[in-house]
Amino acid sequence: MTREPRSAGSVLRKIVAAVILIPLAIVIVAFAVANRQIVTVSLDPFSSEHPASSLALPLFALIIVLLIAGVVIGGVAAWLRQAKWRRVARRLEREVEELRGEIASLRRGSGGVANVPEARTPPERLQLRPPVR
Image (cartoon, rainbow, N blue to C red; front, side, top):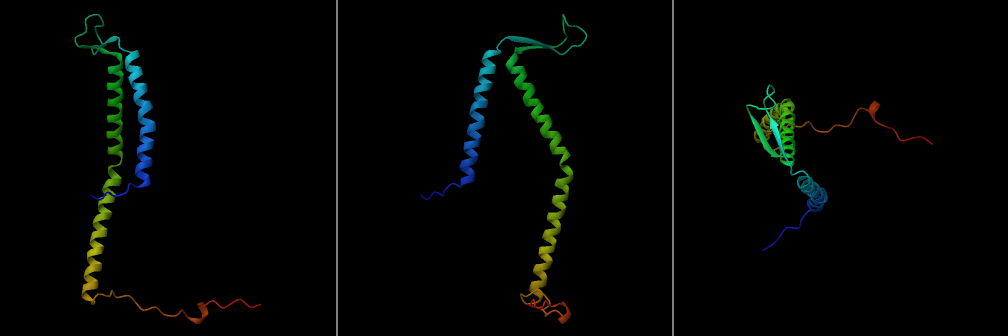
């Protein structure tokens, strides 16, 4: 069983992820332990004493759910904003494939060598002369 050596970038990425994620996980767990009290979230703006719809859950759960919703909304907004660039990239990829096909057909038609003009020497007026001392 042969195993490919890991690239330095892969190992470095795992170390950086561990350095960031482990302290973040510790902070989240500490936050959850410190904020276990139950809060009531009312979705009825007209009656605060007897709301038509309310939800009772621990404070840390409410904050984590709101953070996740914010990340999802931000991701969707970024994805929608980048739609123009994805469309341009797809168009350019199609053009590249068409040009590659055209190059291949030209090479097949000319016997494997593209019609490239032969290199010529530039006119004398364009040639550089060695410096005079």
